[in-house]
Image 1 (cartoon, helix red, strand yellow):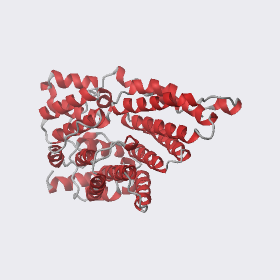
Image 2 (tube, rainbow, N blue to C red):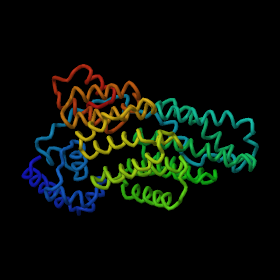
Image 3 (cartoon, one colour):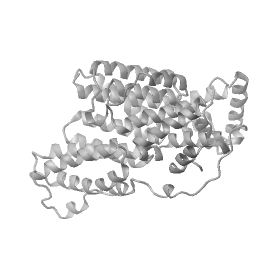
Image 4 (tube, helix red, strand yellow):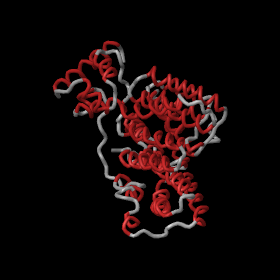
Amino acid sequence: MSSEERRVFGARVADLRKQKGMTQGELSAAIGRTASWLSQVERGIQPVNRLDVLRLLAGGLSVPLQVLQPDAPPPAEATPSPASETNDLDQARLVLSGHPALDVLLNPRQGFQPDDLPALRSSVGAIWTLTHNARFAELSVEIGALVPRLELACRTASAEHVPELHDLLARTYQALAAAFVRQHEADAAWVAADRAIRAAELSCNPLNVFAGIYRLCHAFVRLQHLDQAEHAATTAITTLENTTAGEPQHLSVLGSLHLVLALVHARAGERSAARQQIEAARGVARRLGEDRNDFHLEFGPTNVEIQAVSTAVELGDAGEALDLCKGINADGLSSERQARLLMDMGRAHAQRRQHADSLDCLLRAEELAPEMVHTHVAARAAIRDLVLSAGRTASDELRGLAERTDSLG
């Protein structure tokens, strides 16, 4: 986009905003960006090249995409799909509905035996395995049985077992929050993260509270409540940095919070602030010195670079993202993390109009974590753009991927 094109586009955005009777603050809040970013767009300083950002602006202005950008590709004809009618986490969502253990309030009874602990520990570990491998349908079934058991146990166990049971409950709700975020069910993720934070506090494990705040921040990002995400992450980072503890778990949580804050700034279009947070996370990772999985955060030098790729893609810096990919070996991380890297590589190639490379990365991501790719909003947007760009020349592989991800509409 040339400087003149940016000026014309910015003037069009400003005119449409004023016609709707919106201030810059109101429009920026509606689309999850900062007022300074929108001001730069309207003044022709900040280019808007990505189709997903154009769609976001059009949605905030309540106008068709072609009104905002006349040469944008027309929307494809919507087609119904069974995949759009159900959600893999429907059963898990029901678990969050209402009080988790009403019967115990009116009918106190013995609901926990110390012999139950090994099985509960094993079940929580299995929940996280399903989460890391993006097997959400199976996760939903297991959660339906596990959460009521843990909630009952926390309320009926003797005092000596209560802290560990609350720790297990906190980790379970964190897994559920992570899964809901990945399935774009942010309101449910917020509830699950809040319950995780409360259970973690009762477990007497302060660092697990901070891990819950990390999950809460991701829910806020999905909801486009960037101010809340920034506040929660910044407050937690400041608290952790003001303590002298430097054990691995402390560093894992601190580094992860820097990464989520980088995501917040990237979503707000704040390039410098996002990169500062990535550098801060790199510094923490160097202190940690290895890839770990404390609180199932998978924090370490490798995951920092994966997040650096994701941040560059969010900012539209596709070349930088692909350069960063060259030095990453993610074989030691979960299938979900490996798939996420491939998905972001696919998005980066799509931004550079390297359609064959983009399709290859997205297909490889699908092999590793099909449920994640099929439901991930950014992945589906990239696939939809590939289909629109290819038109009638779209390959059978691309059309098949678009059908599996419900990206033709």
